[in-house]
Image (tube, rainbow, N blue to C red; front, top):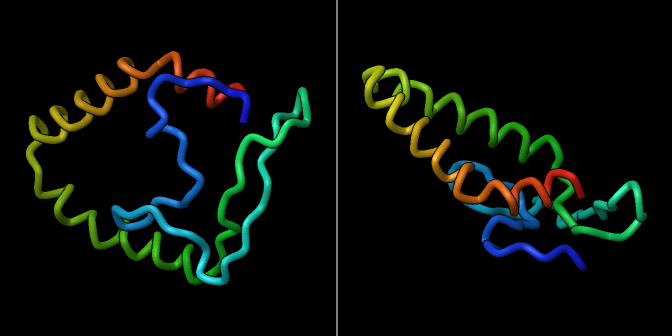
Length: 98
């Protein structure tokens, strides 16, 4: 990849399910290309039913804990997420537009 970013931890070639980076259960992957240059940007997991079900189940299991937080606690977490986005906005913009 010819894309240069400062925070290389932002560039993942895995799926994020239930707090962990993972690959497709079957091992299948597909290329992601920049549509303007046709340059290969990444190689990512081609997820199937099992991974989709695991992601839905993880979200369903996380909902009660999220719902139990006060509005102030949820606000603090969303604000922290916003701060991370702002701290990495240049790298995120490069990734999103590639």
